[in-house]
Amino acid sequence: MFNKIRVIGLGYVGLAQALLFNNDYDVVGYDINHDKVLKIKEGNTPFRDIEITNALKSKSLKVTNVFNEAIKESDLIIIATPTHFNEETKMFDLSSIVDILKTLESAKSKSIILIKSTLHVGATIRLRLLFPALNIFFSPEFLKEGSALYDNLYPSRIVVGYNQREAKEAEIARQISTLYLNAVKNKDDVKVFLTSLEEAEAIKLFANAYLALRVSFFNELDTFALTKDLDSLTIIDAISTDPRIGNYYNNPSFGYGGYCLPKDIKQLQTNYDLVPEQLISGTIKSNISRKEFIAQFIIRELIMKQGKTIGVFRLIMKKGSDNFRESSIIDVINILKEEKMEVIIYEPLITDETFHGYKVINDLATFKAKSDLIVTNRYQKELEDVKDKVFTRDLKSRD
Image (cartoon, rainbow, N blue to C red; front, side, top):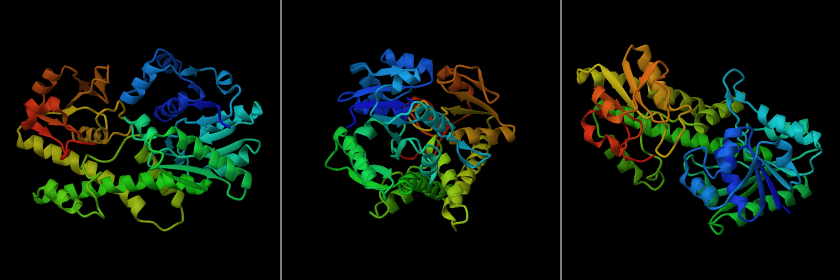
C-alpha cells in the first residue's frame, strides 16, 4: 500500500525515517533548509550521527526543498517538523504542521498522513477537525540524539494512533505498523501498540516525563551525597542492584536538558490543567534546583582552589551530539554570570569568539592553561591530563 513515501522535515527524526525506508521504497525527503538539502545530496549528514552518515554515503537519498515536488504521487506522507514549546502559550507550536496540512488540503491530497512530530494530547483530533478532508494518523518516535537511525532500526515499540471507532482506520493503522515492522531489524522483539490518537500522544509525553523524573531522582540523590560528603557512586550502584530500580539511566548530571525532555514535560504539565498532579511539576522544579545547586557548588570549588577563572568544557548535553539546545550547563553558566564569575568556554561547534558574553577559546591547550577549574557535564578523555582540576558529576563516564 505504501510504495511512495515522502518525509517532510529532515532533522534527526525525519532523516532517520527516510533512511529507514530508503532501501525498499520510493522515498523523497523534503526540508525548507536549502543548505541541509544540499549537504544530504552530497552524501553528508547535517548533524553528528555515525549511522546516518554511513547510510548517506552508502546509498543516495532523494531530497528536495521544493514542496510540490516532494509530495507528488505519494502514498504516505510522514511529517517530522519541529514542535518547539512556546513559553508564553505553554503549548507546543504546531504552526509548521498546520502550514503543511493547509498545502496538502489545497492540493487535495489523498495520501495517508502520518505525524511523527511530538504533539500535545488532543492535538491530532484538533488537526483532523481543522482538515477533515485529510487522512491524518499519529505515531510517536522514541529515538535518542546521536543514535537516531539505530533506534529506528531497533525500536523498543511501535505505536500508531487512529480513530478506534472507524474499522477502516483500524486497517490503515495495522498497515502502518506492518510497514514499520517489516523495516526494523528486531522484528521478533518489538511490541506493537495500536491505540487511540490521544493515547499515542500521551505515551510519548509520559515516556519522556518518566525519563526526566528518573534523571532528577538520581541528581537529587547526588545533591544529597555531595552535601553530606557521601560517595554518590557507591549509593547509586548499591540501590541499582535492585531489579525494580535497575542499573541504567542512573548517571548524575547537571540536570536534564536537550531538545525533548524539557519541552515534553512542560507540555504534559500544561495538559494536566485541572487534573491533580505533583510529580510532573515537581520534576520541573527539581531540575531548576539542581542547576542552581551545581552553580553554587562550582563557586565553592573555585574558591577552595583559590582560582579566578572557570573553564566550561563543551556545551553539548552528551557525547556524540552536536546540539546544545536547552543544555543544562548553559543554565549553570547563566547563574554563574549573575554571580559575576569569570568564565571561558571550550566548544568546537562555536565559531564565534564569544558566547552569551563569555570568551570562547577553542585551542584546548590554551583553554586548559587559562582555567583554574574546569567544569564539564560529561567527562571526556581529553581532560585526563588536567583531571585534578575538573569538576563533573559524570560518575560513570557515560550518558
